[in-house]
Length: 467
Image (cartoon, rainbow, N blue to C red):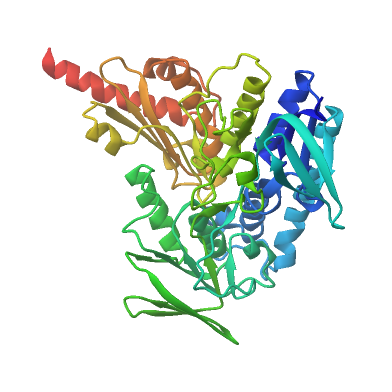
């Protein structure tokens, strides 16, 4: 007889949902995590604090209101780190309470500490005082998440040279900043600090950024960021970072030297598996600490599952939650549908980017014909009301069966707006539904109708020429 039917290591989005799903199915469930990390990396240093920080930045800088009230408009002239973190601490505190309450309400046992495998059914939990406790379980779910990858050649001091975790603990808003890496996290922080008035330089060894996104949308974001005085150094590699009393000097392999108050590395993430003693459970991780799983999220040991960022792509809180639920259902022999292949991607830059489906380049490479329908926020009453004249929504439509092949959005509320397109695509709807539907006015959702009309008008022109 084991102590638990399911033991979950890690209480982030994937771990939470796995534990609660199994508990709802009547299983005895336990979760292991450090007391100060309930809710996981997502809640303490990742998704929630960074998105809360973004809201604080938008509110205090008045950035979104400048089209209405002038470019010098600011809600608060001198914005301090305390101003920014007050909101973050409030939200994180509330969310920790929510997670604790949900686990408690579902009778999930919480064990404070770190876990490591003793064998494939046993985990040793070490608490803050060093006391160790052995727990056994029929099924184990690894949901330990990731940490920022740190190049060995860089001396991080958490004040001048930071990663995306320690940037949340800055002592002051830097006047200038170098961000190494133009991935999602790097671009999100670049736009936040640029909005605060920091002079930001983004260094990226690839020739572009966000290459999985629509090219036109990325160009629009680059234009907006350059407008906020962001400098991009593409095709450049950092040779060294020197720490000095008054800041840091970033030296590129091309010989360029960039002085700044602070440097933030955003060079990918590393799976938190090195302290798990995976070998004792018969498991291994790759060089980036990630664990391989099958379509049911089972590892090489069938009764041990892994979910969330620790298994790699797509490494999003939203997908981690679904993976956790699916893994728990499979372990409990409960029928579960596979996660839908259509998954929205949201990038919380300023402005936001969100998309679902394929891009123009992908469709062109696959030789799939498509028509483009575009709606621009400046043509919508809602865009004028909120002061966003830069946003846009793009629909990619099949001229053959009139279904949506992709939806790409840039601007205020993009990560919310994308779900209308997701619902239409997921249900196999056509562009004609969007043409005929009545949307509330004035809203950003109305952009779907405008873009749908644009696409159908173009398709009609082609059909008329053939008649």
